[in-house]
Image (cartoon, rainbow, N blue to C red; front, side):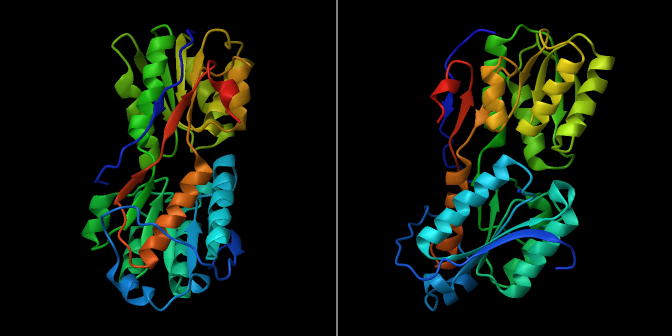
Length: 345
């Protein structure tokens, strides 16, 4: 694999368009604090939130931050970033995740419904399904609770058909980010057959990461298999083995998450094919960094998760205070390769 510098992609602002069961949660009380909260720009705002904003001190504000899981580094990093920002600003945060992990869609819906009933001041949510949360988002709209999407988006046509809306999306442009990894692949891997390990079917982020990578491939690169592994390492291991059994001449693998990338690498090694296949993935967790250093992973996609979560929290707080925000707030990403991996902290 050739060595070139990783690409830093600064995503610009775009206007367009992610209590019955058990749960994992963290509730933090920040107390009162004087802090300046900057508007992220011009865009949508919530009228009901504006009417209440003047009456609330920061210490009386509670923001629910609901994610799909606490099972991997991305979600724990997001928790650390959001809770640190809440503490800094003196605002209360309820960081919540369904007990069943990323596949527990009903659990996530219940967490959002509970947050609405409790009357939180804003909800930040990383949706585990592109439509299942839309009815709950509409309920939050009706209750005057601003909703910020984090990381994953939803089916906006479906949401609008219900009469609902989101107030902002904070995350990354997954299509463009994945395209950067695909371009690096084209420049550094020999043309050949490609296998793709998808996330969960119906999830926007998975679809965008698949399509973004594919859009960078030239005609010399042929996608011969593309299967979901539900963001799970063990499932990715099984999917990878099945794909390689049916297509032993695959030379490139694109896994749309770090966890699945690690599962794919393990399967490739166990089948004795490590020297024949270039693997690329998305997320740049600690295992990815080590895999690049060990020569097992060609490149991954890094983004500042803690800063990203803090930005989502800032956006929600701005909405609570009646300030205007950008409809889409995109974070920076960087392709991490053997050439720049040692520069990471």
